[in-house]
Image (cartoon, rainbow, N blue to C red; front, side):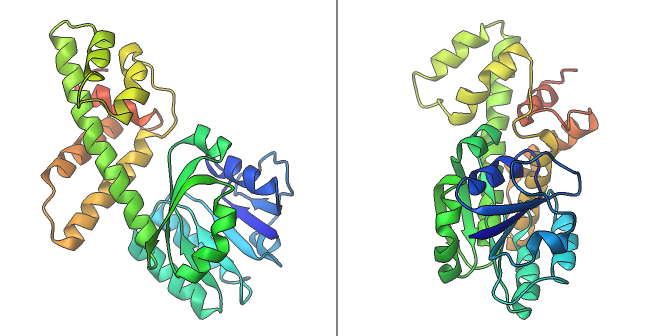
Length: 278
């Protein structure tokens, strides 16, 4: 199958590499990249004659600008799969535009981090027409090991935001309690082990405890990306008329982390913002 992948960043490039193991992939990014597959010189070259086009860019406005360009060259019958993390309402508007051109569109944001992208073991949440999802599923299975269809356009993006909102709330609890343990003079390695004996065991603690203990935060998923997603979550709550006080606290933590210049560090660096560390 002839495919395109636009947005070859930390996640996009390994995802495209996995597709290229079984299909003809053409890649494009605004920053030139070394790739094992052909790299196009323009959006037009990237998508021309392709059956399915994947995209993965950082922000709402990036998706809007990208699809304004892609719409100029789109061909009826093409399927566009946006794997960015954006507001579902933005995806719905973009999908309406592409469908008016005779194309189909899915939103399919991912969870887990770069090592899972390399292994093809991402979680993928999908929104759009179910029959289009079923056509694209074999391709998604080359990039992810857990794939779930969530409903109509924007539902995948909404699920991704909900996922990261819950991660942010769990994380904030872990950060506060480990900070308290440190203030009490307890050995954090022992504290983490002891949490594992009961109901306090959780994925965030299992995967980020060493970052916190050693005060080293190599980036798998950045503070600035989680800051964006937590703000999206609070926007969703506002749209739904739902009061979510803990989400507001998490948003304030990430705003503080951004102010302190932690944006490019791993999102576990929020520990420093919660515990007033430099």
